[in-house]
Amino acid sequence: MSLDRYITLGRSGLRVSPLCLGTMTFGEDWGFGASAEDSHRILDRFTERGGNFVDTANAYNNGHSEKIIGDYYRGDVAKRQQLVIATKFFGGMSKNDPNSGGAGRKNIIWSCEESLRRLNTDYIDLYWMHCWDYHTPIEETMRALDDLVSAGKIRHIGFSNTPAWKVTQAQLLADRHSWERVIAVQLEYSLLERTIESDMMPMARELGLGITPWSPLRGGLLSGKYRRGLQQEPSRSWSRGNLDDRCYDVIEVIVQIAEEIGSTPSRVALQWVCAQPGITSPIIGARTLQQLDDNLQSLDVTLSAEHLKRLNELTTPALQFPASYIQTSALFRNAGMTVNGETAPDSAMMAAEKY
Image (cartoon, rainbow, N blue to C red; front, side, top):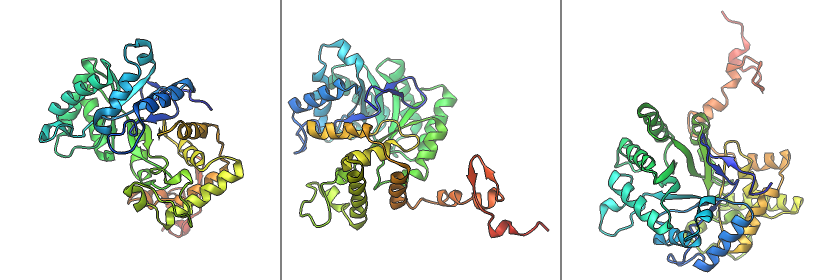
């Protein structure tokens, strides 16, 4: 499979590549990341391979990530049109100004204008709410976003890091008022973080939303470079805090499978995410061309049913109630029969005749 095998995002006509290029590491303002020159080389490689979906945020490297992207196609209208640019609002960008962050109308409109300026464009293809703002009524957020769509400044709306019930509420409000609907959700998802399988993934499938997972390699932990017995540790404290015995167990199996199929751990971990139902375009990050090339080759990896089973069983999450209860409901719902391909044995509850 190649990057130019495009898919539509959610219930929309927006065509995106099967992998999305995440650009949080574009810029060095945070003390890590790629220079503007290296970032442009990464963009060149990604687009040469057919990739068109690029994700950023106003807060990434204090806006520098957006500027690097804008400088990449500056003055080239055709180059800009070929890219699907996604960016986010929410992050506070002006010190001592409480209205420079969040999901209120004042900030959404200001943030959009600032992102348009940094991105050197007059429209944004996909505008994400970076996180749910529990201080702001969702009606205000949705109406402001709908106004931006009507004004031609954004094309589509997405939600990131927002509870399933809030996404559903927003979608129902959009339907009721004929506002622009949300087309996708951006959520953390990997072999080490599968809790969205409780509510978020079923919600997305029911509402026809695309799912673009972030951190499919769990901050690089699943790249294979961190293993038991090695002294090397992640440089970022967040990654170090998640490097525990369970993590090492998962890494070992990923490494084994990679060796069995002649691939790399990163490609195996990414392909597992791509193979999950409802997933549209996992977001891959890269600070170097070597990292990008390795991640892109995950599209050429084929995991057997046995490989998928090993990974699934090893990382099965403890789902929140009632998801865990619903999973076992076939035992007393199907009465021992097969329904839609699902077969479950009779439970003790169903064994006796009715009185």
